[in-house]
Every structure is written in C-alpha cells, then in structure tokens.
Image (cartoon, rainbow, N blue to C red; front, top):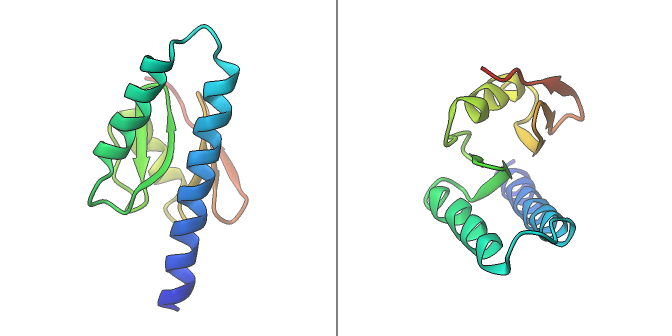
Length: 106
C-alpha cells in the first residue's frame, strides 16, 4: 500500500513538472526569469510537504494537501475524498479518481 502511495506522489510530481514546462512554453510573453521564480517558489512552498501536486498563477497545492491560498484550499477540499488533486486551473480541479470539480473564485 505504501509503495502505491509513493508511486502516486511521484507521478503527481512528474505531471506537475511537465505541466509547468508546458505552461512555460505557452506563455512566451513571460520572461524566463519569471518562470524560474514561479517554479522555484512553488517548489519551496511545498518543500517538506510532499512536493508540488499542482499550481496555477499564485495558487500552489502540495501533495500533502496543503495549499498557498484560499483557491487552492477549495480545490484540495473538492478532491479530499477523490484521491487528491492531480491538476488545477483557474476554476477547475481534476482529482486522482478522474473526477473534476468547479472551484469558485471569491
């Protein structure tokens, strides 16, 4: 069971890194320094919290279900009984069991 959970965490981290790279490639107007700072900030926020599960703009969600802001907290709560957050965007969160939920802005 523990091995399965560790593998899920590694897959989530890998997906987050790939997504970050894809976002960086799509946001050609942002400087590489901005991308590096956002990536480094997300990694630092989740250090000791299982690594980055997902991030978007200023919201960062860690693998242990901690988050950096209210929007991230609402996404975590939406996926709490659905195997955690695997992807996150402006108003949508996708959970580990392949369900998705709307995350309202406040």
